[in-house]
Amino acid sequence: MTVGEALKQERKNLNLTQSAMAAEVISPSFYSKVENNLHEINVNDLLAILDAHCIDIPSFFMKIDSKVKTDYFNLNTFTDRVLDIWYNKDLKQLAELQTELTKYTGNDVSFLNLQVELLTFFIKNERNAKLSDSLMQKLRAELFKQNVGH
Image (cartoon, rainbow, N blue to C red):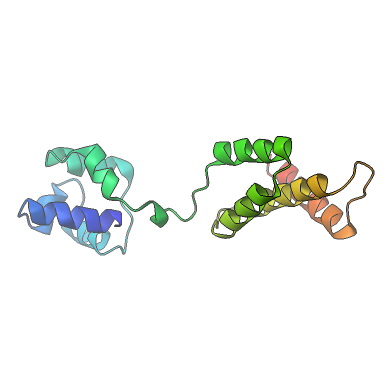
Protein backbone atom coordinates (compact mmCIF):
# COMPACT_ATOMS: atom_id res chain seq x y z
CA MET A 1 0.00 0.00 0.00
CA THR A 2 1.27 3.47 -0.86
CA VAL A 3 1.11 6.54 1.38
CA GLY A 4 -1.77 7.86 -0.72
CA GLU A 5 -3.69 4.61 -0.44
CA ALA A 6 -3.13 4.49 3.31
CA LEU A 7 -4.36 8.08 3.69
CA LYS A 8 -7.44 7.30 1.63
CA GLN A 9 -8.17 4.26 3.77
CA GLU A 10 -7.83 6.30 6.97
CA ARG A 11 -10.01 9.08 5.55
CA LYS A 12 -12.75 6.63 4.62
CA ASN A 13 -12.54 4.97 8.05
CA LEU A 14 -13.03 8.41 9.61
CA ASN A 15 -15.84 9.21 7.15
CA LEU A 16 -14.15 12.48 6.10
CA THR A 17 -14.06 14.38 2.83
CA GLN A 18 -10.70 15.05 1.19
CA SER A 19 -11.01 18.71 2.24
CA ALA A 20 -11.55 17.75 5.87
CA MET A 21 -8.71 15.23 5.76
CA ALA A 22 -6.31 17.86 4.40
CA ALA A 23 -6.93 19.62 7.73
CA GLU A 24 -5.77 22.99 6.40
CA VAL A 25 -2.26 21.53 6.36
CA ILE A 26 -2.22 21.25 2.58
CA SER A 27 -4.73 22.25 -0.06
CA PRO A 28 -7.58 19.83 -0.79
CA SER A 29 -6.41 19.74 -4.42
CA PHE A 30 -2.88 18.71 -3.42
CA TYR A 31 -4.27 16.20 -0.93
CA SER A 32 -6.36 14.61 -3.70
CA LYS A 33 -3.24 14.22 -5.82
CA VAL A 34 -1.42 12.57 -2.89
CA GLU A 35 -4.27 10.09 -2.45
CA ASN A 36 -4.12 9.30 -6.16
CA ASN A 37 -0.33 8.89 -6.07
CA LEU A 38 0.22 11.83 -8.41
CA HIS A 39 2.22 13.82 -5.83
CA GLU A 40 4.33 12.90 -2.84
CA ILE A 41 3.63 14.51 0.50
CA ASN A 42 6.49 15.71 2.68
CA VAL A 43 6.94 14.06 6.05
CA ASN A 44 6.06 17.14 8.13
CA ASP A 45 2.74 17.62 6.32
CA LEU A 46 1.92 13.92 6.56
CA LEU A 47 2.62 13.87 10.29
CA ALA A 48 0.54 17.03 10.80
CA ILE A 49 -2.43 15.44 9.00
CA LEU A 50 -2.11 12.22 10.97
CA ASP A 51 -1.85 14.19 14.22
CA ALA A 52 -4.83 16.39 13.35
CA HIS A 53 -7.00 13.29 13.06
CA CYS A 54 -5.46 11.36 15.99
CA ILE A 55 -4.24 8.62 13.65
CA ASP A 56 -1.70 6.31 15.27
CA ILE A 57 1.54 7.06 13.43
CA PRO A 58 3.32 3.69 13.86
CA SER A 59 0.17 1.82 12.75
CA PHE A 60 -0.14 4.08 9.72
CA PHE A 61 3.44 3.44 8.63
CA MET A 62 3.02 -0.31 9.09
CA LYS A 63 0.52 -0.15 6.21
CA ILE A 64 3.05 1.33 3.82
CA ASP A 65 4.57 -1.24 1.48
CA SER A 66 8.36 -1.20 1.75
CA LYS A 67 8.61 -2.16 -1.95
CA VAL A 68 7.45 1.37 -2.80
CA LYS A 69 10.85 2.63 -1.68
CA THR A 70 12.71 1.48 -4.79
CA ASP A 71 15.63 3.85 -4.31
CA TYR A 72 16.36 2.80 -0.77
CA PHE A 73 19.28 0.51 -0.03
CA ASN A 74 20.60 0.18 3.51
CA LEU A 75 24.32 0.89 3.17
CA ASN A 76 25.14 -0.23 6.71
CA THR A 77 23.56 -3.61 6.06
CA PHE A 78 25.35 -3.79 2.70
CA THR A 79 28.72 -3.12 4.37
CA ASP A 80 28.05 -5.72 7.07
CA ARG A 81 27.12 -8.28 4.44
CA VAL A 82 30.19 -7.51 2.32
CA LEU A 83 32.44 -8.03 5.36
CA ASP A 84 30.65 -11.24 6.29
CA ILE A 85 31.00 -12.54 2.73
CA TRP A 86 34.69 -11.63 2.69
CA TYR A 87 35.53 -13.33 5.97
CA ASN A 88 33.55 -16.46 5.10
CA LYS A 89 34.47 -16.48 1.39
CA ASP A 90 30.78 -17.23 0.81
CA LEU A 91 30.03 -17.18 -2.93
CA LYS A 92 26.39 -18.15 -2.38
CA GLN A 93 25.76 -15.06 -0.22
CA LEU A 94 27.67 -12.99 -2.75
CA ALA A 95 25.36 -14.18 -5.55
CA GLU A 96 22.32 -13.29 -3.39
CA LEU A 97 23.73 -9.81 -2.80
CA GLN A 98 24.30 -9.33 -6.54
CA THR A 99 20.66 -10.30 -7.18
CA GLU A 100 19.43 -7.80 -4.59
CA LEU A 101 21.50 -5.04 -6.18
CA THR A 102 19.76 -5.58 -9.53
CA LYS A 103 16.52 -4.36 -7.88
CA TYR A 104 18.16 -1.18 -6.58
CA THR A 105 18.01 2.00 -8.66
CA GLY A 106 19.83 4.53 -6.48
CA ASN A 107 22.55 6.94 -7.58
CA ASP A 108 25.34 4.88 -6.05
CA VAL A 109 24.37 1.57 -7.66
CA SER A 110 27.46 1.51 -9.90
CA PHE A 111 29.72 1.95 -6.86
CA LEU A 112 27.95 -0.85 -4.96
CA ASN A 113 28.16 -3.14 -8.00
CA LEU A 114 31.86 -2.39 -8.33
CA GLN A 115 32.39 -3.38 -4.69
CA VAL A 116 30.64 -6.67 -5.37
CA GLU A 117 32.71 -7.24 -8.53
CA LEU A 118 35.93 -6.59 -6.64
CA LEU A 119 34.84 -8.85 -3.81
CA THR A 120 34.06 -11.59 -6.32
CA PHE A 121 37.49 -11.17 -7.89
CA PHE A 122 39.35 -11.35 -4.59
CA ILE A 123 37.40 -14.35 -3.31
CA LYS A 124 37.79 -16.34 -6.53
CA ASN A 125 41.41 -15.47 -7.32
CA GLU A 126 44.79 -15.99 -5.75
CA ARG A 127 46.71 -13.16 -4.18
CA ASN A 128 48.92 -12.56 -7.22
CA ALA A 129 46.08 -12.44 -9.75
CA LYS A 130 45.69 -9.24 -11.74
CA LEU A 131 42.50 -7.32 -12.28
CA SER A 132 41.17 -7.41 -15.82
CA ASP A 133 41.51 -4.25 -17.90
CA SER A 134 37.74 -3.73 -17.86
CA LEU A 135 37.57 -4.04 -14.06
CA MET A 136 40.53 -1.66 -13.70
CA GLN A 137 38.76 0.81 -16.00
CA LYS A 138 35.56 0.60 -13.93
CA LEU A 139 37.58 1.08 -10.75
CA ARG A 140 39.35 4.15 -12.12
CA ALA A 141 36.09 5.65 -13.40
CA GLU A 142 34.32 5.07 -10.08
CA LEU A 143 37.20 6.41 -8.01
CA PHE A 144 37.38 9.51 -10.18
CA LYS A 145 33.62 9.99 -9.95
CA GLN A 146 33.70 9.60 -6.13
CA ASN A 147 36.56 12.09 -5.76
CA VAL A 148 34.93 14.66 -8.04
CA GLY A 149 31.80 14.68 -5.86
CA HIS A 150 33.72 15.54 -2.67
